[in-house]
Length: 234
Image (tube, rainbow, N blue to C red):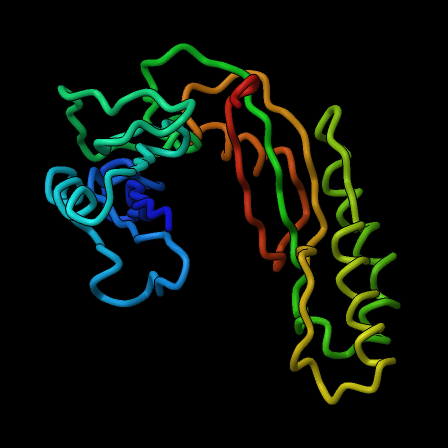
């Protein structure tokens, strides 16, 4: 029986940090993987340990240890090397740090301005989650007209009702199958209109978001969620 221990660096959303966003914590959780082993049993998993403690725990359980540092860097860290993985550096020093997808939040106003991509999700005022399906489908065109007018002053922006329409179509299909209410109903589509576009020059994410808000007019009462990232970011 082949036994491998998998360790991965923990990440968490930190909205109290000086720079808000997702952070990797330099602490590790993991489990034992083997036939007939329940990874949820206390002796077969570890949670929130520093790297040295996690490695000691893992090596006591298997010569095969895989370690994921951050979101992408995989290493072999056991007595038996794992194929196609480099060894974990012996001098590796980890500190709590922003996740790669949130590093733009570390930009300051002194940084040179860059272009940003933006995705905006817009939820209509009074939207009740699609429970009144006939009314919601009837309202789609009227809502869409409001969004298109709001985005008319944003050069190059695109407006889509696809996700909102897909959500409501999925909800209708659920009702047609005779389910009572929405228990068991699931969809990957956002309950929102989506506007995508770019802003040309901002030093920080907050500045880019402010520019987007100024470009979108006449959306009083709408729930607006803005996500931005520097143009060219992975």
